[in-house]
Length: 156
Image (cartoon, rainbow, N blue to C red; front, side, top):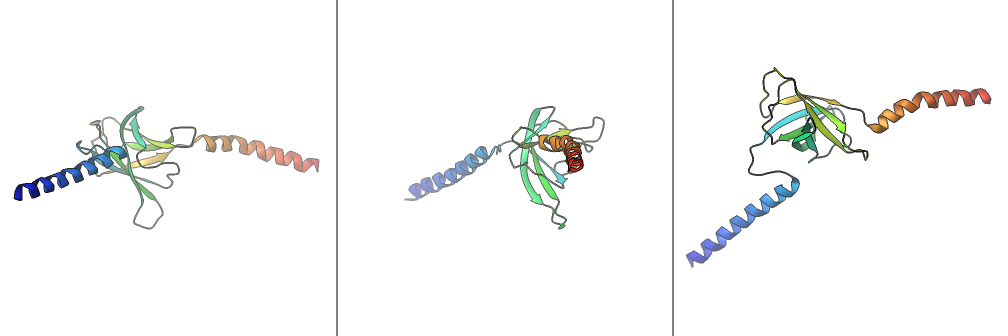
């Protein structure tokens, strides 16, 4: 009787572990790797979602693990970065949100500064945002639109 109960209990624990590992794997997280976590504060993260890649020079070193509001009530957003590669991240590194596709998806590119001291897991990095394609087009078209409206106003 005890042997059967032990087998059932062991099977249940093993099943729960495999379920947890499977869900984590499907989310893109590796349960067995030692990962470092960094945070970046942004005013706007439009188009950035969790599991989007974090890259250095185009090479993926991690992913976005969380996006939450900063608890101070300012409306700023704190983005968690899960770095699984052993590349050294310096304290002066800048995490830049950029448009990774024409569909508006965003990713994060880390720009490190050599020669500075290394940041530790849990540190907050500085962040910046790169304009996407639609913002660039709108900036180019705004003066043309204003001149066209002015021209149409003189024709009336």
